[in-house]
Image (cartoon, rainbow, N blue to C red):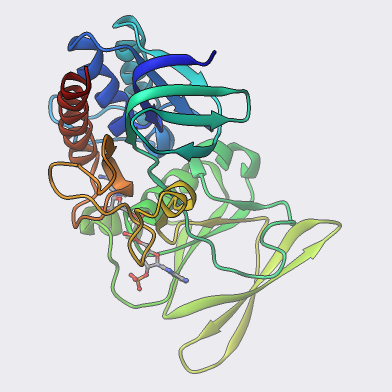
Amino acid sequence: MREFFDIIIVGGGPAGLTAAVYARRAGKSVLVLEKEGFGGQIASAPKVENFPGFAAISGAELADRLFSQAEALGARLELEEVTEITSGAVKTVTTDYGAYDCAALILATGMRHRTLGLAGEDTLSGISYCAVCDGAFYAGKDVAVCGGGSTALQDALFLSEVCRHVTVIHRRAAFRGDPILVDALRKRENVSFALEAEVVALTGRDGALEALTLRHLDGRLETLTVSGLFEAVGQMPQEVLSRQLGLADEGGFLRAGEDCRTAANGVFAAGDCRAKSVRQLTTACADGAVAALAACDWCAHMS
Ligand code: NAP
């Protein structure tokens, strides 16, 4: 006999944990399943300055607080990877450890890192997607950051504190990220920019990254010797489960409106994985609340 929960939430980032808080406060039994680490991508943000109520807080602390709040309210939180979902009046969620049943399901699966798609990207050491997690390994070394969004800019600022030199490589001349971060970076003496340039190849020695080949707008190739490449070229939806359920749009995002209801009865979408235009921490939390209340309604309708 499988364990039954009123609501199962897949994904333990800000959307999923907020949903857990709301659902527990409404008295529902709640299981949150997370495959990597609670807090989601925000957990690796060095500093969050746009979450209401906190002038500045580290992503890790915010993630800890969200986790503790959901746990204290009685949500069950498990590190398990969901491999299959069967939808119906009772939904069965299968993980790498077991299977659970629920009345309502909230998918809050977030996003994953986009990669550059270069040979050696998966096998060479020295490729990272998280400056806060891995920056210390490159203390005193030369590194590069690829990307022109706020993540790349924040990563470069963080790395400039620990590394000897940081090269920011961006395919355009204008940055997509916050101008305040661009100004701060321009003031750092150990930061330089390779603009209108793309990384086209990785060179390694003994399994470790040694150099990048950059191609400039005029076609000129340049070799940049670095010990680390931090890729910050945006994110893509975690689309495996949404495609499995037939709920994904052409980009892999979950089709659901502002009410977070998908086309499948009792299945709700919350956070960055939902097809929408604004993906911020605050909108992820807002989705979590909306999805949880809709899921509670669904449970009431089923009982
Ligand atoms: P992003 O804003 O989507 O930026 C991705 C960057 O990668 C863009 O500059 C893009 O170039 C570049 N790029 C994409 N594909 C590429 C490729 N194949 N080769 C080379 N470059 C490529 O992603 P993000 O920086 O991760 O930010 C995501 C969201 O989180 C944004 O809404 C951002 O504002 C937010 N964020 C907020 C904070 C904060 O402190 N509040 C911090 C980090 C992120 P183009 O510009 O040419 O498209």
